[in-house]
Image (tube, rainbow, N blue to C red):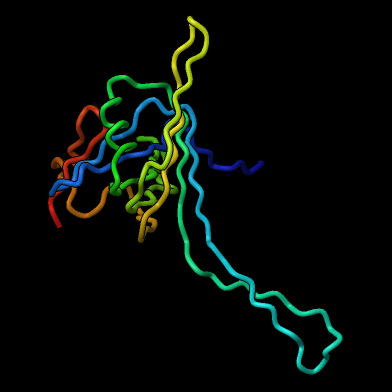
Length: 179
């Protein structure tokens, strides 16, 4: 019997932004048609000569100098979140962001969690097509400081019902206790 990859539909991958309050509430940026997350190590080259053989071609060694993430969100222009997007776009400070991988409610939980850290919207572009088309936008988000991968959907402190389902608002936000 063949073995197939365990795929995840794009609708289970989301971008969320925190409100900065305590407890912090995260809101899903809705309307995304495609989302990408890029983890990058920034490096410099360290060239080492072979002391025993001066004729040998030197070896390149990479030195990691920093790391960062970028999120690109292509979306329909969502008028119900326009004020939120404008505030993120014009802010001169970062917000806590998450790039989240959810698992379907049924089946095995294989890879669930999120990348989290401070980040800033660095560009926002709106495109309007023909009269019958909907407006779209591209939101570019860049990390600003420490970040990391958090295993599991729910961080410590998320309130749950007695059946361990998270207390989640209809817009996708979770209610969390302060740390």
